[in-house]
Image (cartoon, rainbow, N blue to C red; front, side, top):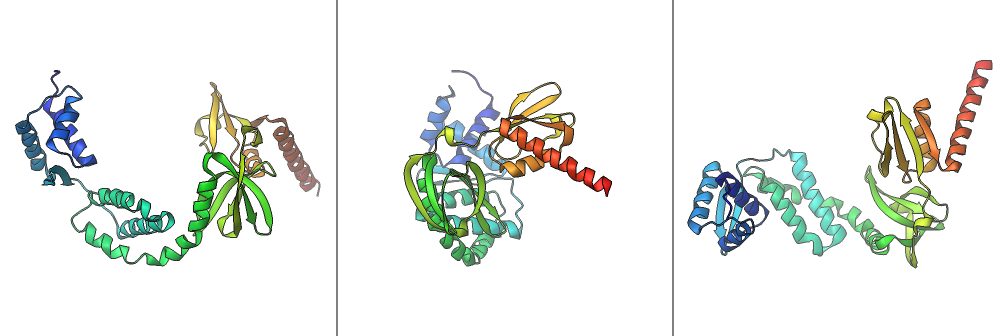
Length: 297
């Protein structure tokens, strides 16, 4: 068996207890998987070391658990409120099946705060019931979209007074409103839809194929942009050169993307597809025409 420094063994035990309560046998088995053999007396000694450092370890139902650690998160009143709101909203959106998982996560966070954290948290938990009506309003819609949208299935929705086919859904939240970022299978473009305006949701037996996607807009960035450019959501780098960067984007609305890229001037060039190159040239032509008209007036 290999010899490992005691500090590693102590931190390994700390890590195990931090994740989940463990029995002595479970600790021994886990350490043995790393070729570390320890007696129960040595593990008890390591517990004593951890306790002297400030860790509170207690035994319950044959397992040892880490009740608190000698470092803490400094949470503000707003932090406690939003943690309580997060639990409340999660349970209302997804039902009781997620309740225990949420409580486990929040207990882990609260274990890293000071001794008064649980009392503060309970106080805020009773004050977030006002958000229930929002979660209930959208719960059925979100559940349906998640169910039907699994594996990129196509979905038909009644949006306002118009039926449209959508796929590849993601959710966006802004100013107490919920939006869907979707691929519109009818217009072959990405759109942002207000969830509140979706009246009906229908599943379809079809799946969205790769061929149905809007093509990637591929563009090249040069000069200072090569090193300073921050990727937008859904973008990826496909080539890096000594003085250039090539980026692909099929997530952003085409018109908004081209408007953004045109602001980069001669530091940006559209590479493909051909249709986007032509649209980009057309926009540049209109801008040049408008500038000439201003100069002649």
